Length: 75
Image 1: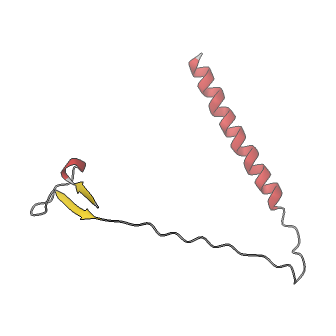
Image 2: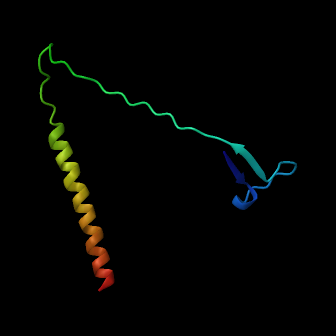
Image 3: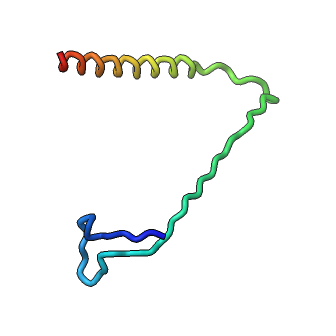
C-alpha cells in the first residue's frame, strides 16, 4: 500500500487532505503475436527492408553529428 503527500508535490486543495492513501495499483499487460500462414501464396516484396536500412543510416548519421558537435564544443 502506498501513501502520497500532495503538498510535497505542490498540490493543495481547500478541504482536501494533503496526504492521500493508502492505495494500491497494479499493472496488467497483454502481448499478442500472430503466426502468418502463406497458404495463399507469398506476398510481393514491399521494399520495407530498404526503408528500415535507410532509417538506420539516418539514425547513425544524426548520432554521429551529435558526437561531432559535442567533441568540437569540448575542444
